[in-house]
Picture 1 (cartoon, rainbow, N blue to C red):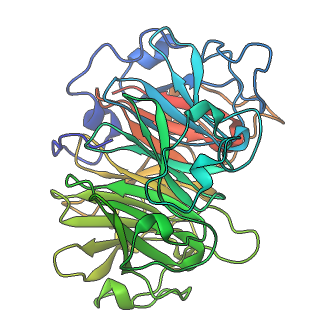
Picture 2: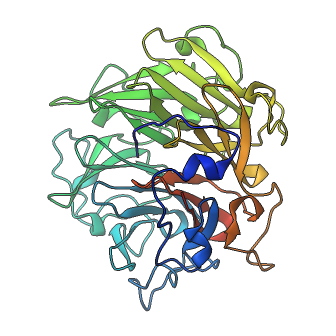
Length: 403
């Protein structure tokens, strides 16, 4: 979710997050969340699963199964990608969790099959009749609709929050084709990250095709490639993004990889180049790509120094914070890091760099965010008040860090 940017110092997370809201996380599990820079449990119990007997349980009593991402809507509610439960779930105003997209079954499309027809004017379906298969990213567009990267379905789907109808914006199966034509007829190979511009253009990481593609809105939305050659690699900095290589995992069983965020009134795109362990930047006006953080070798170093000298280990989600910094879910380092885009300095804001597995040990879920141990965080998000949320994916929980 995009928020107005207010530049703040980058050296202390608490300072960066403490300016606007003093109430913190009232109503969460632990009062520590009323202290800026402290963490508390926001959703999940640290155990994988789904509450079949009570699917609308309180968020602190609800089981999750590898939560991948989350976002906050214009309604102020949180929307969670419950990856291995194949559902999009919403945290309601009364703190219950409800299913907004998905069924009890893994699959592709509703029983009536309307949403599977290779037609650009498909009528869509009720979202709770549509079976999903491992979704990766959700974002709200300027039109108030919820956009979903349906990874294993090879589709970008859209939920109209007014009509409660789910349609397919782009994707008609597995492969690579369709550039310069109707997006609904294009083929994808596991679309992962998405970002949406103010004009409604939807950008997505077409992961196993190792490209970034753009879906232009209109009566019949069209699709084109804006970055990547289709070849896995790390070349191309200083040149056109269309001629560059990226590190989005391919192969038969790739991990989800690649994330996007737009900045500077959509003039800049930041890319989590996951398998290359770097954060790259595309000038959307010139098409030039460069690197702003990380080296190709994996590691965990550089805090307090320049981000270009730092090392990451499979950076996943990236988001712009209300302090103007770029936040990175550094997955295999079990941490969230922040890059000051003005000074170039980097620091860890959540996590110790040490893995803690709730299935095997007691992992704290409250206290100073820098002392909380994570287990492969995939997704991060900010709410309208500037609080940070971390999808602690392999611990099957979501943490909230108070601003």
